Image (cartoon, rainbow, N blue to C red; front, side):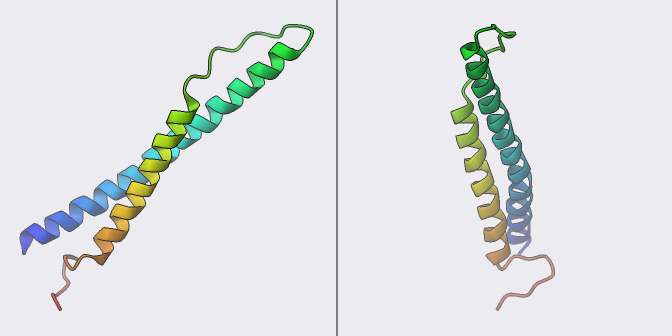
Length: 91
């Protein structure tokens, strides 16, 4: 019985931690994509504006962010479907 409660607790907590981590990575990808787009527009102008640094691999940041968001939501839902709620009885 204590093992099920521990498993429920770990899945719920890992899910709760993965969702904001995924949101942060996804936001970072959006910011990097915006910087890259702005740098491309700035280079097209006749007067060369200050060149922005390379935005980096925004696609992989966004992909990893979406994976973490989905994994976190899945873990939270799965922990809710388990019978190991603290204080609940088995059916």
